[in-house]
Image 1 (cartoon, rainbow, N blue to C red):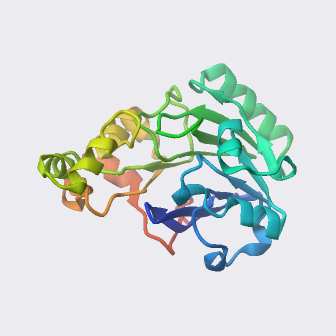
Image 2 (cartoon, one colour; image 1 turned 90 degrees about the horizontal axis):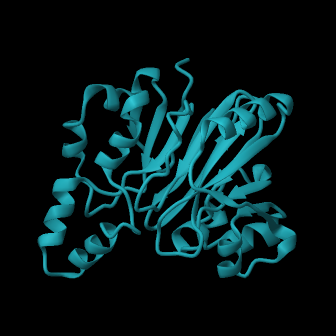
Length: 254
């Protein structure tokens, strides 16, 4: 699996994923199509929620390139998208083992397709979600803006693409400031804003021994300090990457 990051920040989010079996999808649509070089691959776009940095160009991508937008009913309604362009998904509270096993088996039956489970996230927007993607023998979890990470019961995703919006010390500094950034930091830490680096570590520390590739995205320029990342446990740093726009990341060591 190769994840090519076009953008991952409050300015705009969009990434291209190519699975080992050749299936290609896009994650979010907050980047102008003019910056997307793989336009021939625009068939499916998974949109997590309706905020502009994730969904601003969903309608244009659908109408101009004919791709399908995978999203919840709440996000569809907020974006006012025509039903002909949408693939609607319902959200689940968690990815229980029985459900995960079902989709693993189904993905094996249809090796040239991908299957999606949408999990409920916690953000100040109607019906936001995360996506668990099952494609052949590869599994991806994509989770952006959320106040807490839904439980996937230690399922062994090959790639976990997750926001790490802030680091605790840096966020505390912002909260202490009596300025606009302090107000923003308060929203971030509200329970319906974003998760930070330590929340990501706590969510996945029990599976680090299996070495999933953890892509840390949507990092705040003001509230994330890379020095705090360098202080994280070695096994976490071994598995994780501070992603950059314009770069590609693969779970294959070769």
